[in-house]
Image (tube, rainbow, N blue to C red):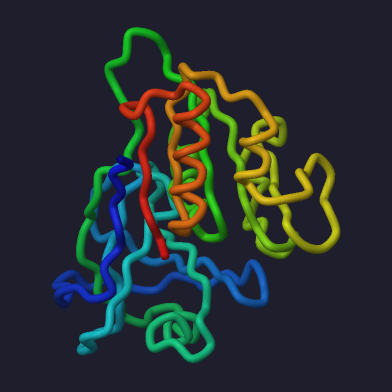
Length: 230
């Protein structure tokens, strides 16, 4: 059975204060929040609890930036009637945030005999850890499958080497090199090398379906890692 790390809806209040540096809109419903690092160390793939000062409402976000950056960034999908995401989008430079972390073990494998090769599978904002992986490891050997409903959800794909990304678009106009259909449809119609280390991040339906397809294709359980966003 697949082992997943599922995000929790509630978390203790954070003790560390950070300051907003910028809010970068990348779609009508998504933005990148950049804030001061304040000495916080993390490994690419880890997540933090983030919220406003004196508020018990926090949410968990994978760090979008690289461990070598002088700042921290998270990719946020705004929920119009939400408590936290609209408030984060309204932040201005200098505003305070509370951050707790880092947490999690959704990090790249190390110590293998040969340089590992990776298959990254993401839906929506589940691309965040892979953005950090790619920025942190310029020579990384990977293929990213990013499942989205439309081209507007292809968040900052210019970060990735073009030849290493396959957008899997289920609706709307197809960008160049895209797969017309869901991410899991791409896996079911393309052979996956069983030696790959496969990382799955996003909604639970994708993760469980992709896991089954990968196992049926010969990928060992020990080479599949997953983190559920929603």
